[in-house]
Length: 74
Image 1: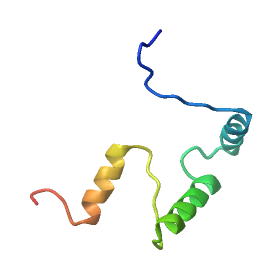
Image 2: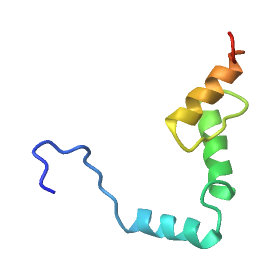
Image 3: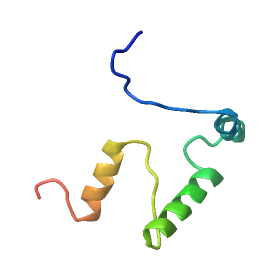
Image 4: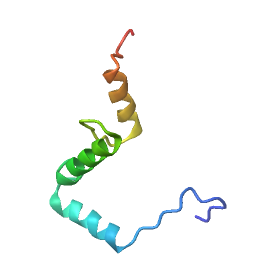
């Protein structure tokens, strides 16, 4: 498809391809050492004790809502 306005300008190289292959070979696509390392680095970057990675924005919003005491009927 030929887009008149690009949705994104992504540049991925060999380093990204190798990192993705390493994750696939590990068998851990949504958990594991890479995710734990990302969570720790992100928590350190924003100055909090913990961070939790989620797979999409909907889950992130659900977690945030629950964290502030949201729930059915509130």
